[in-house]
Length: 143
Image 1 (cartoon, rainbow, N blue to C red):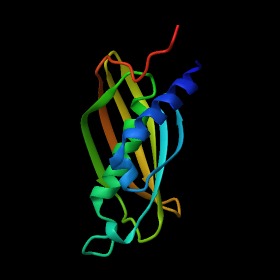
Image 2: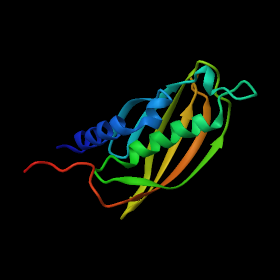
Image 3: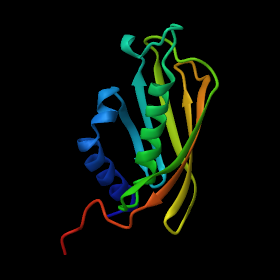
């Protein structure tokens, strides 16, 4: 399998079991080694008391993009630490896009940056995730 095929297979296996990502209506737009892009529409139940998208939903979208990006090497990998900075509000019915990019991957540790943007291209949030591999595969290939 090519690295891109491995990344896609890992993403398919994860998405089939990822009810949290499914619950927010996120769609996986692309995946490649160390990269993932997801999007979601801001639904009415995602709005907070200020009439903007609740930060927890934005965090979940960013965290899911991070998870798909750091699990592209056929190694089960989990979050070790995450940080998010909100830059502008998510608006009702707009599509938010989270693009995760690998910054560093050494041994069992990785660093990933995620940019969440609104439909008009504005920066909504920036997220940094630190990952840790569990040294177990998502799948094993038949000989």
